[in-house]
Image 1 (cartoon, each protein chain N blue to C red):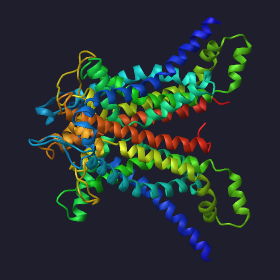
Image 2 (tube, chains in turn red, green; image 1 turned 180 degrees about the vertical axis):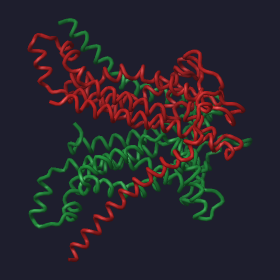
Image 3 (cartoon, rainbow over the protein chains, first blue to last red; image 1 turned 45 degrees about the vertical axis):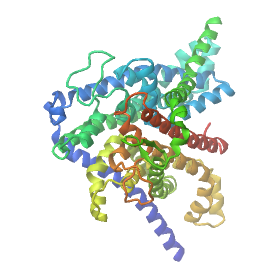
Image 4 (cartoon, chains in turn yellow, orange; image 1 turned 120 degrees about the vertical axis):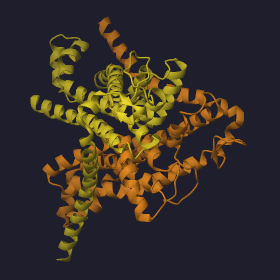
Length: 283
Length: 288
């Protein structure tokens, strides 16, 4: 009897803790949605900010974040997929492979602000790109590289060995086998990795703080050497640097909501794609 | 055949770019920081005060910043480790399979909330609560920062620990149950000890994430470079100093170089933690 009671109490404690965490996550999301959603209208999304962000919309921040993430993926995706193909299809266990793996885990653990310092030193100053879309995208690309490599490699490894063997037995070269019998079946994982990378790049503030972001710039970027506004940085500025932070609270919530919707929408998209392809390909 | 060989070499080149990026990070951090070692010398970094802008004498001691990071990280880990461990055990061992399919992604959702959004939430919701609860002048202090960082560490620790618990062979559980142990006895005396290295690795990954976090701490810790153990005192972390001050320093100045040294210290700490976490997981076969 005593033992039974003990068991029930322990299960209760475990369940309570887990659902408390779930509750906190839910509360944060609800708070942002409840205060942010009413602010959202077409004008807020499509107008330029006025009076240092105190009025008007957030169009340049949305566009800036879109360009930044697209630039990031355009740079990181080819390198990430290439690395994943090497690790899953070519790499023999040995010192080079071990070093590459160590480099990837190291990259995954580098604090985002250190990426910012690195981007400032290499791209902004040494390469003389200045604070620009190009410097920011390159910096963010280095940051999301591990995410893209790991998810792509997993999906390449998930393709059964028999596919490769059958292809090789029919006379395909190694590369032909990879291109025709392996890559097409791992597209889902690669897309998932790319989307997760985009989500991470869209939400990061610290690296772009030092490499791209403009405080207040009510125009759209014209070239890759332009500075841009970005949603996360705009939120940071409105919440901490604005002279009258209480007055612009609705704008802060609105910006937070748009950013959150973008990032969580991407994560959700990644999950749905994974589920879809898991159903489509079964072996 | 020659073409295939060329393609393979091409892939080796692409894959090596990760090594190149890591090397460049170390190279450029040290390159920007280096002149500091000559003047005013590395000993200046061991000062016990961080006063980068001053009319008398600037002081660049990393100690107060490191103390801030340690205090905030300690609070975050004290809160997040027990909660995450319990949640991981629940999800892996107790939850209904369908429940697990929903719970794990939902907690992992927390990881994809941008840190600036969490910082914003901390600023407008959590900080006022803390201020009211303790009757303080301001809610911007180490405790608020630590609690927010706990939220960021939880998804990492839960997710990786749950994987570790899941990878404990079913025979362990069956054996324990067959000997008459109850479900809780099996969990706490057989399954959790077997998964302990993995849980430890998870805690280290979480710690690495917390130490490197920038925006949330920048927004809610109050940013005063003090050496203190009082969780209700404002502190300034290493990451927050870089983010807050780098925008205003002249490039190449001593202050600029000192901030790069702070970055190097951060990089070395997180590198060390990740290295140990990786060694643990390789050794206990939790990573391929």
